[in-house]
Image (cartoon, rainbow, N blue to C red):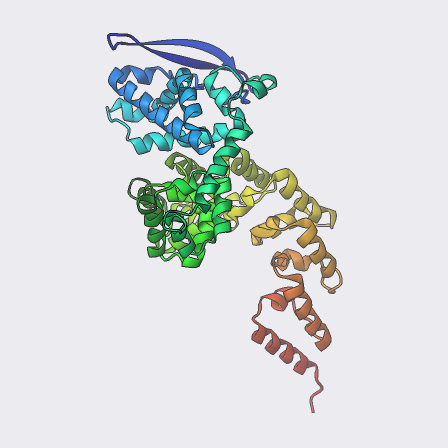
Length: 473
């Protein structure tokens, strides 16, 4: 168990004459989060030190920016304007904490006297607020208002002002707006435009149920520019409903201030600009992640030994790797495969989706599956190296039935070490039909030949094998 570390909290006071006073208190904290909303800084970093080079006027402006970001975030979670405003008024310490986070994240910027833009402030704070919401859910308001004191879960049920009825009312209003018939006897222009681009009314209502802010986006200012931009990138019109269903927030993002700069940033990291249509379809949320989150993930990939070119290809082929937590998913998974002797860099490149799986629920059971069937650690390591996607298959629906059929095929178990890709082919659509033809022809092909050849080449090879068995005149 790691030792406890000192945690520094800072509070900012503004005097009537405009001067700034900061006070600090130190509290012992343990590595495991008791309440992630607390202002935590490494012991060698003085959180208030950054404030000394910032003018009171700039601090005041940054506090207002932080309030605006928090207000918008609370509204997106379904709070009314009144409740959001009340929360802001009761959250001075938390607002100070957000400003301190800005100074910690962008310390070098302040040292050279460069102010942060509104977009940079949003990029720095929104991921943090999202993480707090994931942890505290509807208790977030209580946590923010009572910062830095941990929320007492036994009491939050009666003190949290965000009730289910409030959220439900917001959703009902939003859904009603979608279905509302205007003075012209038609649905709202936003809704008609979305229907024109492939969504039906039920789909729009479903999106609204999950994301009540959706029907309030401006058609000309938000929705239309984003969709037309995607179409210009080569996104098929038929993909638009899928993309919006996955990430409706895209229609609320500024094209010039956020979306395009984010894409340029990702292209500089190696995302293939010619394949944006496929990248957006695969994982539209990529365009809504902060630069800090993307940089953290790419830094981890470099740390694992991947080249810049390889990282770019991973982001293009598997953009959802950005959504994987580094400390909860990527690093533990890398350590697990390293313990098996697997080249983690090669596995990351070949099968990055494997790193989004649960070690306990997915990875260990698959490893154990092969151990129980007589394969050694070296065998399993070889199979993984040859076919990284092996761990992405379901035990019950894939590995077990295909293994059971494999036992009837007459091959030695070593064939699977040579060709673990066997588990990637359809049992009913490929394996059984081809095996039946081979069996009926009374010939024997290696597992690789049986499954990888095209239909015409497979038939041709079987004929050649049969002809060799015929007696010569």
